[in-house]
Length: 238
View (tube, rainbow, N blue to C red):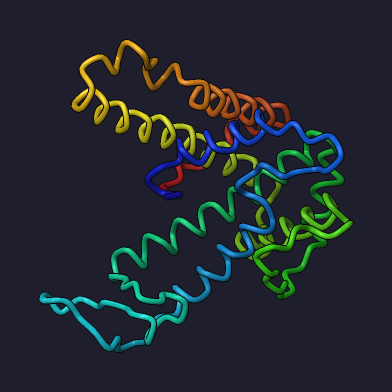
């Protein structure tokens, strides 16, 4: 879902935010939040360490994992190619979540303060919370602590300016992936529904896609404002 249907994920965030009429309780509509990223981290941890000799192989001799090899698969099976893709996808979105947090802090704090906090941040093991758990009463403070933990783990010693450049590259990947997944939907729609194009706008004009590219321009401007116009990293793969 994350790797092949980015448009649907972003659309759900927008839909939940728009439909949320609650006034007494704060309801989190973000798909990428501490609760879900912790679950991704737990899944990635399990998938990164498959047994050297799985109990099952396919007709070509390639590894096929079951619950006996990777606890949590249940009645499903997992091929090696899919395992590697899942690890890469979970890693990408955990990093993206953390770097988005860094970008927000740079916007609301001083560059020097964010840089100092990242330099001081260690990477102690943080437990995976139960599925129903949200961040504690610390709220944004707890979320920022988790984002710093991910940055320290994934980008040890990386300068803040380079992190902003990586955020730009990742946001570009997300925006392009959103448009590509919507384009696939539109192509299927055109094949099955003759008047599909009459009631749907082109992928590039979809509000979710427009917002994703607007976010790309925003983080580009943020990086450039701090001298990072040349700090953008090569485009990340998703």
